[in-house]
Length: 184
Image 1 (cartoon, rainbow, N blue to C red):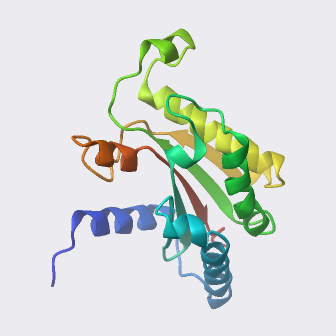
Image 2: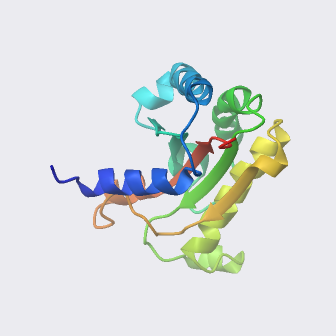
C-alpha cells in the first residue's frame, strides 16, 4: 500500500467528515459533478490566475478563494469587485436548495495589529470569523437559503503552506466554500 502525502490525508479526512452514512446515489453524484463542471467553466479566469481553486470531493465540492481576491489586507468587508466574483458563483449555488454550504475563513499566523485591535478584532480567529460571516451574509443576500449556510472562523488553523514565507502566508489567507450534499 502506498503512503499518502499530508495534503491527500487531510483531504481524505475532510471528505470523510462531510460524508453522511451510506453511499452517494448516482443521481446525487451526477448533480454534484454537473455543479463542479459549471463552477469550473464560470470561474475559469480566477482558476487560471491561481486566485481560486475548485476541488471535487466524493460527496462535496470545495471552492478555495484567496483572501486577497475578497478582502483588502486587514479588513473583513468585501469590496464591490469581490462581491462580483462571489456573485458569479451564486447562480450555481442558489438553485441547489438541498446543498449545504459551509464557509470557512482562515488567516496566516501574523498577529493582529493595533488598527484591527481598535476595531475589536482581537485575534486571527475573530478576523477569520468576520470574513466567513461576511461571505455567508452576501450569499444569503443573493438568494442562497439561510438555513443551508454556515460560517466558521478557523484563524491560523489548518495552514496549506508554511507561514515562514510571504507566499506561504498568502496561501494560508483564504476562504473555503464547501458544498456538501444533503445525504438524503
